Amino acid sequence: YQWGSKSGSNDNKVSKMDEEDGFNNVKEERPNVQVGKAGAQTHVIRVKFPDKDVEVHAKDPELNLTSMADLYALLQADHGLSEQFRLAQENENEETIPIENDNTDIELPLSLTVERKPIRIIVQHHGKSEMLEDISMRKTIGEIRVEFRVKSGGLDVWKLSYEGKQLHDDMTVESLGLEDGATLLGAYAVTVHDLECKTEKAVMVHGFNTLVDLVEKYMEATHREKHAGSTIMLNKGDPGIDPFESPDPATLWDLKIVENAVVFYHSAPFTVTIRDRKSNHEEEQKMNLVVHDHFKVERVKNMFMDTARAEWGMVDISKEDFTLIFANHEMKDENQLFHYGQYRLGSHSIILVQRTETKSASKYQCTRCGNPVSIRPGDPIRCICGCRVVEKLRTQRFNIRYVCR
Image (cartoon, rainbow, N blue to C red; front, side, top):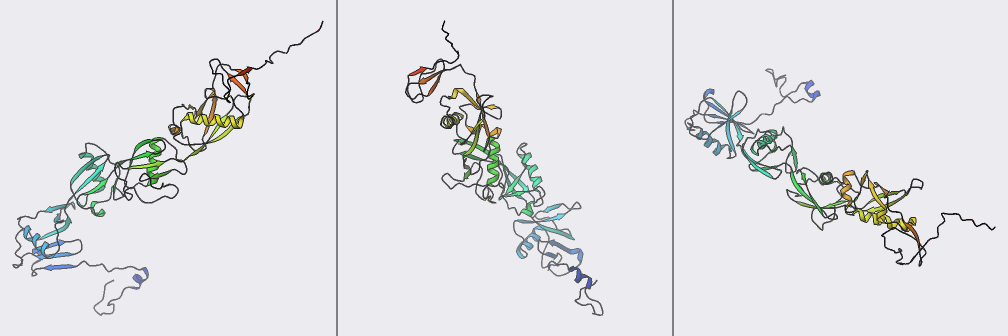
């Protein structure tokens, strides 16, 4: 339809179909500014600003336009062309060619576009920082990644972030509103200090990661399982945060966790099950022990023996009698439990007690408390009560019969 007719019957009316469909066929018009006295269309310089169109009638003698420098001066003085912008001309491939602010003669007619000047962008990745020069507004993040790889000598950066937001390859510098000197972050190292295990581990993170991501990367890097109730602290002495209990959408950039920052990890206690079968003919026994990642295996064995003596009456058990087995691997006395995180040792894991082949022990009885004492060749003579005097038990191996004749 048309807006109005010669008869005036359709003035300022919209067709019924358009009203029902909700279409708006009225195109928003950009402001068009005329500069100079109107003349032939072949003498017009059309300049497209982001928010308006300017038509400069170059042959108006009052304007005195002879060079590109004169046009720049006119647009900067009267039409808001700032130092951050420049004039450019599109070629047949829709690529923009910058027009320099110099004494080059103006060739009419002329169509120009106002665009941002190229900027410098800093890319930081894996401890390396590169300044990328002459980055146009139309350049994409994918192209910036390629430039960084070339300038850094082959170092690939797969993900970039800006102010805590992940950037995708099809985003442009203009769409992100990047300013000159903006810094894009790739992967960077954050050190996690384990307060219980007294260990430190650097993990690679991105600015758009959260605390949940940081803890998961730390667990993966140290081959450990996360235990319920474990917390992380941004500063030593701060209240601990359990990121899994109440996930915080704040990014590491929001929390000011930058490259080479140190955070502190507190690993919560967890419960493991110890299964013991002294022989194939005896019923299996189980006990639950509350342990920490920093406990050594030797300490866990002592906890097992103390409980076995108190609850199972195994008064003569010693560390040499058994080894602990987890995931078909012998647990060495000097290792801390977190070493077995690579086999997924965590809450409610089952650790087996494997009896060792030792020299046969002789059975004695303590003269003080009467408890049985097993002593092997070379062992010190001592009961658990501290008494050092024991008696040899009478054998019942032979059934001797006496017959009168």
